Image 1 (cartoon, rainbow, N blue to C red):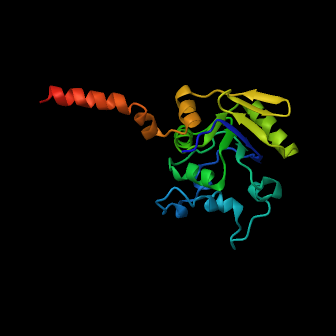
Image 2: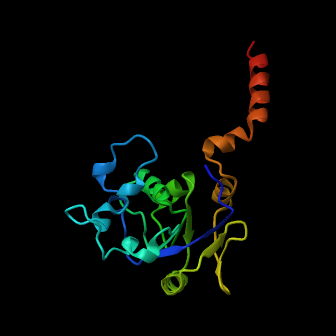
Image 3: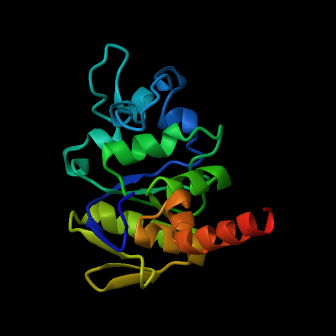
Length: 197
């Protein structure tokens, strides 16, 4: 997993609430077993019309959204079923940071475990960054170490659990974290094998 320490990127606004995992990645695209390749189906029912053509009204299809790596959206993002495919699709599409007033708990955890940084801000702070992203195409800097979002003099602190922060900052999944204690585990196993002889 790639570490996230300081991320700079363009933001796109999806000003909707209660976006569930079925909207993020519709069920008909869940047959793949790899983690990659889901980005093309992200928000499929919104991004595309019935004939498969791009929906020109959808936010991610606007020219200014091209290349965005920060998604700013409404509360309760990622609600619905607990499918891990939702963060896979967001990551594969190119997003690395998601800013919202609230997230579904399981979705939030799945994001962190898959290298996406979910940031909770107050509704007022989220609205402020939505407006900023709509007004300016300038990159936003997200500093995980400082827990700070900034752009042109506007700065907002965010909270994050120290465990999840450590995982994202170092690019660790749970196996990587366990391997940090490999030497201690080996010593313990050696002692136990000696006791059990």
